[in-house]
Image (cartoon, rainbow, N blue to C red; front, top):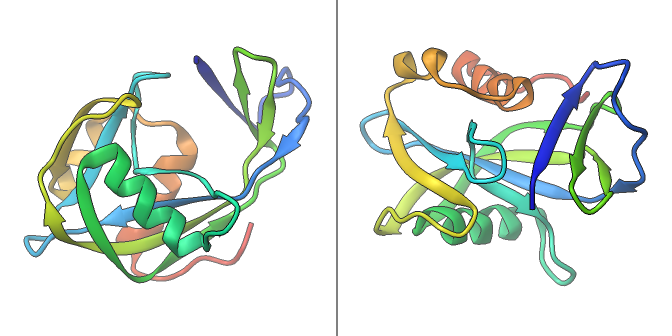
Length: 155
């Protein structure tokens, strides 16, 4: 399913759903960050996705990271909360989702890097390599918040 991100775009379609989601900034012992290239928009992104009934948001971040990258992770902190009503995702099926996500800080504990049905590439990047990558603004914001080392105010 294709997806198009709209952020602060006056021509964006109106949201018709709000779904809790979680993502993870996974950092290895060399200080590199784990990113995946999304199949639906071709952009580099953090692993993450929608929360399932019966799981917590941290559990969601752990599950999604494993599903999308092949790595088991441990949550060690929080990067921030993201709920910008001017940021929506429009899907091919007609859903237009308002963003609502908590981004966690995690470390890898086991597993092997692997692409999934949702990704075309999964790699570790040094922080200085990230600026040149194609990335939607909301993911770039999460990475910048992690790099700044301080949790931003909720938005």
